[in-house]
Structure formats: C-alpha cells, structure tokens
Length: 488
Image 1 (tube, rainbow, N blue to C red):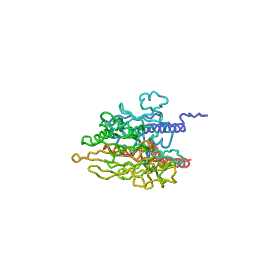
Image 2: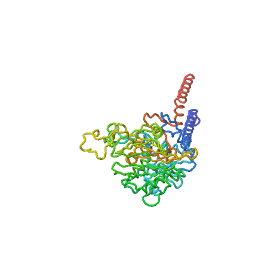
Image 3: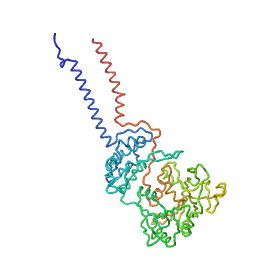
Image 4: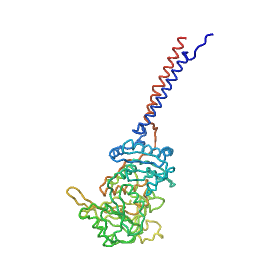
C-alpha cells in the first residue's frame, strides 16, 4: 500500500496557506490597532456622536490653547484607570483632559498614584495636594484644581448634591491662564474694622488669577497699588482720616482706574461716616434686613435666604452664559440708589430685590408679629449697586468704581456652590472693573441624553465588517461551495 506524505498533500498546503493568511491578517490588525492607538493619544481620532459634543473641548478652548507659548504640565493625582472607573461625568472629564495635549504641543498630561507616591505632594506643601486634586504647573508656578470643581453641583429636595453638568474647559483653562500669566490684577482686603473670615472669597479670587493681599489702613500710609480694595463686614465706623485715604485711592491722582467693593453685614451698627461717604457715590444702606415672602424664592424654608433679580441685563447675560442660574443672598441689607447721574458719576442698580421682598426695620417687634407683612416695609430695594466715576484721557475712559452688595454672605456663604451664580458673577464683576475680559467662559455640558461614543478606528472597523467583509465572505463562501459541488 502506497503511503502519502502528509506534508506534501494538497490539503496540508491549503491549510498551511490559510493559517498563514489568518496570522498575517491578525498581525496587521494588531499593528494597525497599536498605530491608531498611538495616533489617537497624540492627535485624538475619536468620533463624538453626542448631541452637544460633550467629549470634545470647545472651539474657544482649542483657540486659546493654540496661543499658549509656555510648557504647561497637567498632573492628575490618580491613575487614569481609576479616573475612568468612576464613570459618568468623571469619564467625560478625563476625555476632555486628554484633549488638552492633543490641541497644544505645549501642554502635557500625566497621571500618578499619590497614595503610592506621597513624596510628590512634598514638592508643593502649600497646596496640600490630595488624591482628589489635579495639579497644573508652568515653571515655578502651580495651581491646584479639585476634581469636584470640574462639575456644576446641584441639590435635590433632600439636600443631597449631585452633578448637574460639567465645566472642565472653563476650569482648566483658568488654571492654565493662572500659571502662564505674567501679570495679574491685584486685590486687597482692608482689615481692622471687624473680624470676618474671608478665606473662601480669597481662594475664589486666587483661583481666577487675581493676586490677593490684605492691609490695615487705620495707621500709616495706604498702599494704593492694588487695583481693587474690598471692605468686608465692618462693625466699627471708618474715621475721617481713613475715608480721606479711600477718596485719594479712588481718585488716583486724577488717573482713576481703582475700585472699592463693600459688603455689609445685617448685624452691623450705624456707621454714619461710611454712610456719608457712600451717599456721595449715590448709594444708601438702609436700616434693618430683608426677608422674602414668596416661598418659591427662598431656601431651606428660611425667608432670610433668597434669590434676587438681575436688574442690569447686559452685564448679567455675559455672566450667565445662557445658563439660568440665580444669585442668592442671606440676611441682606436693603440698598437704595440715590441718583442716576451726578457730575462724572453714573450709578446703576445691578441686582434688585423682587417686589415680594420686605425690609424689616431693626426696631421691629418680630417676636410678636403675626407675619412679616405686619412689620415689613415695601420699597424699590437693590441688592447690588455700582457707581462709576469716569475721566477721559482723549478718547479712552478711565474709571473708578464703588460697588455695594446687600450682604457679605453673597461672597462667603454661597462660595463654591455651582447651583448659584454668585461666584461667577463676583469674578466677572471684578474682571470688568479692572478692564479684563471675563477670563474664560464656555457653556457647561450635560450628559443627559448621552448617545453612543466610539473612536474613529472602531467606526471604520464596524463599517468594514458589516458593509464589506461579512457580505463578501458570505458571497465567496457561497461561490466556493457551489463550484466544489458542481465538479464532484
């Protein structure tokens, strides 16, 4: 019986050929996947099919990153896999972060495990880094961003907070601006008129690229170099010498260009000297405090905590950026605008109390009253008034401002609350006073109605697999089977 050499058989040759073709095909797919993966990491080949491109950086972000001319390093304090594992908005935030180095060769993105490498935080002891932070550095400048600050938080009816939308673009660009800017506007808190902790407000200003300091102007000369001075909740009156210093500061040798912000507190006593100073600027702080009688405008069932209205729509529209967010006040003072124009000074009510809000005089007998309506005083009251004195240098206006808020709580009690517009409004107001364009603003992004998201390679593979490969394979298989059976 004649033995057949299996290695030379036609079946073996065809099988070997098929195996080689399969291995080559798999090798090509693997190499192609590696190449595309590397290209995706560098240039971003993902295809975002969500309605509002929630996984893409905004055009404004991309345009800004093209202007960055210094090396910036973004370091996430957890491994990328950990960030991704949180899912939802955290995954979206991570995708946006990865777009930053893709949009600019000057920006790099790294991930570390701070728990396993605690020595990293020792390089920046003043920042007190944790595993829930992101570090942005440029040279010897560093800025910390808490991951939670990448999102807009809101509270449900039970007081529980949840992520309503994402604002990664705006927060990260602001941080990059902070570490790359050569000069920053200077803000100074005036001390010595009462004890108030303004750390939250100070941190907000620092995070938005203001250089923050403090000084006591009760004795000695006043440092007039800051662009803005802030007077927080004074409980003692300002003497005439101090007021002369403030007058000289705002006049700035006739050059203007300075601003003063004043935040009263509901419990403050009468301050006649300060009141006279403000009256010259067309602003009066009334006696007592405000309460809201419309339950739809209050928080925590407390009539002392309420929202106010935007009276000056041109400015507020740029701050809100199409987002319907309220400005909140807690136990505010009633403000009255005394005039609209006087000489070179123009006075504008920026925020106002609705008609449903009442002023409760300090001598009112609240305990024995049946309702606030029995003791409250109706009126056209403001929650923020801004007075501007203008001098023209040729065609260029030079402005000094005095702005009075209804309450110090506007800057302190709601700081960090992304369900209120307080932080954004305050920063935008200060930016406007120093003549700086509102640092950066893009609409927040919501994952509501999220759709399927896959990258460009996956899209091509799905297209090729279902439109070309599978139909062709079925066709060829049919032809081969038909041909073999025909020649049997």
